[in-house]
Image (cartoon, rainbow, N blue to C red):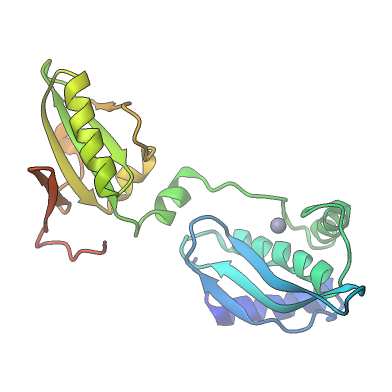
Length: 234
Ligand SMILES: [Zn+2]
């Protein structure tokens, strides 16, 4: 599921009552479309006086709404962030980001609520592909002289595309390089880099390129040939 603010608010209130004695002050909730995290508590650490103590203020709870996750994972993410929040809002000092205090609270809530909160959760391949779903990628389809076909995903910067195209043609027996701009999640499975490593494809006919846009290199410039069937999101 993709959470809404209302959903997160309901879970927050429920977990606050159940696991934190209703002691956590309400916090602004925002949806995040970032790829890099499932949840985050942001705040400002402010010094009270010249030699005084620090106090944390301006809290915001961010929960990922980009990736379709099982409800249980979203709940555990909210709980994970609520532990950070309870430590920060009470101006408690932990030994590290997920220090002793965090781990004690995590163990308590996992035990009391039969939850599976962890220190960090890695996204599986499907979730990672989803995270990159709306991110267009530049991919090259390379035909070699021996009849083999390979693909390569490279960062979407003109200088990288031009340099890579020029260099690989020098180094490998290549008959053709076709460039595409695509948001198909298939290509999210390949690392995006400027390295010369090309991934050979067994069945090039099945590459999902029917909705991709073409990038045409002419005289050291790149021209985008848009695919009418697919409105572009650059
Ligand atoms: Zn954390």
